[in-house]
Image 1 (spheres, rainbow, N blue to C red):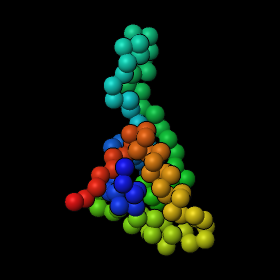
Image 2 (cartoon, one colour):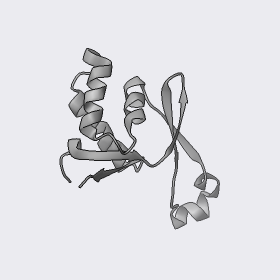
Image 3 (tube, helix red, strand yellow):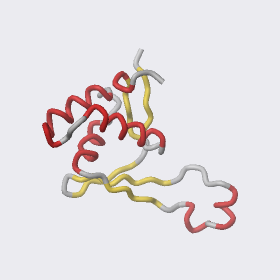
Length: 109
């Protein structure tokens, strides 16, 4: 995959905001056959993941228009010294969101 700073993320899951903090609402898309048989009540369960102040800010910037590099700069500007190593922190957060299918990353041509 290319340099993350050049990629554009967009959200794949729902979220809700409460007191400027974001909670991601994740529902597993394709349950396995075992889950269908033994864990029926969990198939449509919505899992909630609470984000901290910085994660919430980053999530709100994910709109398909801002590149990861843009989001890093906005995060540095918003939080200043409060967020050390914004480059690493935001990139790692994007990788985790992508790995868990909360976002999709694409490259503009």
